[in-house]
Image (cartoon, rainbow, N blue to C red):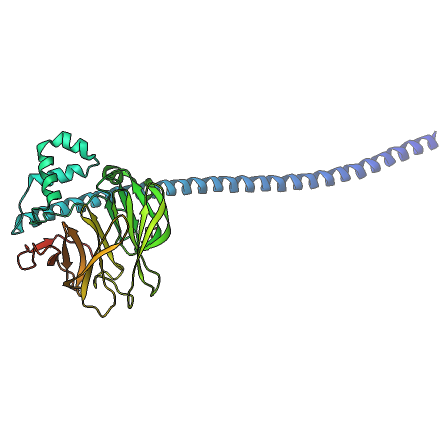
Length: 368
Ligand SMILES: *[C@@H]1O[C@H](CO)[C@@H](O)[C@H](O)[C@H]1NC(C)=O
C-alpha cells in the first residue's frame, strides 16, 4: 500500500509544479500585455489630445481669418467712404473755383457738350436737344468764338497708371486710352459711358499696334489714330493707323537735330498731335536748343506737311497745349506746382492774339 501512496503524492507534487510554472508564465505574459495595453492607451490618449489640440488650433485660425477678413472688409468700406468724401471735396473745390474765377460763366452750351459726351451719336443729340445742339454745332464748326472760360475739371474715371492719356473720336464717340508714356497697346471703349462704367482697362478692347507710340501726344479722328513714334535719337515720325482695318496707312517723317520734348514740364511728350475738321496739327521741337514750340499743319489723309510755323510760344515751363479752330493754346505752370494757365496763344489766321486772349486758369490738383 505504501508505494502507491508515494506515487500518488509524487504525481500530485509534479502536477502542482507544472501548474506553478504555467501560472507564472501566464502572469508574466498578462503583465506584459497589460503593460502594452497601458502604453497603447497612453498613445491613444496622446493622439486624441493632439487631435483635439489640432482642432482647437484650426478653429482658432479660422476665427482669426474670419476676424481679419471682416476687418479687411470694414477697412475697404472706410476707404470707399474716404474716396467718396475726396470726390465730394473735389466737386466742392471745382464749385468754389468756378465761383471765384473772374470769368466764370455758365453756358447752356456746356450742358450740351456734357450730354453729347455721354455716348450719344450726333443724330441722337440733335434730336434730343434740337436747336441748342444745332446752334452749338454751327458755333464750333464755324469757329466764330474763342474760348472764354474753363469752369471745372470733371473726373470721369480713374484708370491705369499715373501718366497717360485718353481721347475720344468725335465721329464715333469711341474712347481710346493710352496707359503710361509709351507702348504698343491701346484700349478702346464704345462710349464715354462704357468707359466710365468699366471696372478698368481690362473692360475695354485691347488694340495692339504694329509700332509703339512714344509719349502721350496721340489723336483720334474719323476712325484714324494718329500717333508719334521716336526711337532713341532718330527722326520724329507720325503714324496714321486705320482703326477699322487695323493697318498703318501712312508714316510721315520730321527730321530732328536732337531728341527734344515739346513741353519742358512734361518731358515724356515727345510731340503733340491734335486733329479737328480743319486738319491735323503737330506741336513739336526739332532740337533741345530750340526755345519755341513749332506747329505743323498736315493733311489728315496723306500726312503731307502743308505748313510749319514758329508759334513764338516758349517750351520752357510749358505743360500742355491744345488746338481749337486753328488756334494753339499753350498751358504753362511753374516748377513749384501752382495752377496751370494759358499764357500763350497762337492763331494761324492771326485772328486771336496772345494779348487779347482771356487769362484762363485750369483747376489742377495733381502733380501729373
Ligand atoms: C498701366 O500703366 C501702369 C504704369 O504706368 C502699369 O503699372 C499698369 O499695369 C498698366 N495697366 C495695364 C492694364 O496695362
